[in-house]
Image: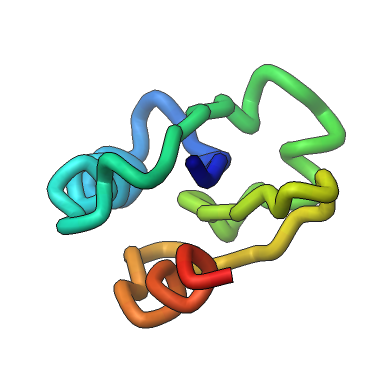
Length: 83
């Protein structure tokens, strides 16, 4: 099982679109999605403010890989899922 983090905002339609696309992904059963509101943390705002939504994959060793932002890039997600 792969872990993904979606950095998001409550009023962001692109964030809603990316989350819906993740749930509809053919391999959706192979990953868990944790949604974090960037506005709840000043460090996250500094890091991701204008980039949201940002999809990050968490590797088994705990390191993080930025997969895509703004829109779901299926190919990039598939590459991460193949790791």
